[in-house]
Length: 339
Image 1 (spheres, rainbow, N blue to C red):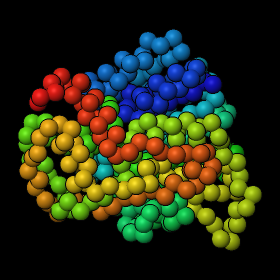
Image 2: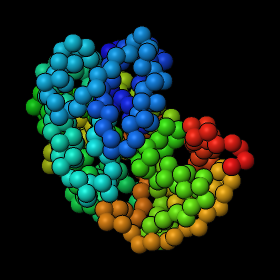
Image 3: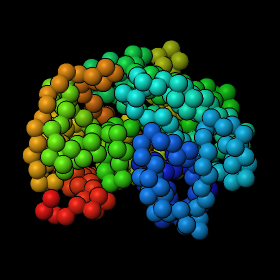
């Protein structure tokens, strides 16, 4: 198939593009290569497949509707995976305008382009952050998500609502995936795994929030990519059992679905740190601090719906995933095995 992946130089986007190319798809990637974190990492990810004969790349922003529409008109994608977004819960407290531009205006442009160019299926990134103030575990797509704790979370919930309107009005099949703490090789430098690895490798203290009581549904990148591809290959149809008198938050009488995509096995944050310390050969001081604004104590994905509908089955244990991440981190940063 011809597949357009936005955010193609990002952590998940680059891993997805590699898998799509390996199975024989023709892929167009779009990324604005912004400096939210070191662009050199994005360039290094892109270098893994940039010269593949079935790949083409465009450096532009989703907010540039004209260039986005031109790419759709020229490439004529059959399916689209929208992973481009301004990421980060904490950064949304500092620069809210970036989230409005990318996550709302940009996503609106993607929906319009999909509508006008007859795309067969749009898969887009949502986030576990939409669960916000919810405390019932595990988080389920059956639950209402009306209490976001950050603007980032609010924009992701907005994406789900925007997608539903296009599925209803224009019969555009859309699927939202609520990602749960993705980690692994080539990960984002602003996320906890990379921040922890940086400080542990230098022997520096770690700031651990919520006094170390966080639990996170850490999900290895290969499991995430497998779930995206399985979802992409199965466009949703209208749910014949949908009851408007008892509406279900995750499905519809339009071709629309929302799923959790996680490991379904929350891990104490201190255990995750201990595994990284073992891999990097250092034990460091943990500075236990209060909860940060916009953060949530725990995350846990109920992936029953994704398992039933597409056969999603995450298989990477936390021990194997952290080991693979640490091995990559050592190679990427040129660390010897004794450091």
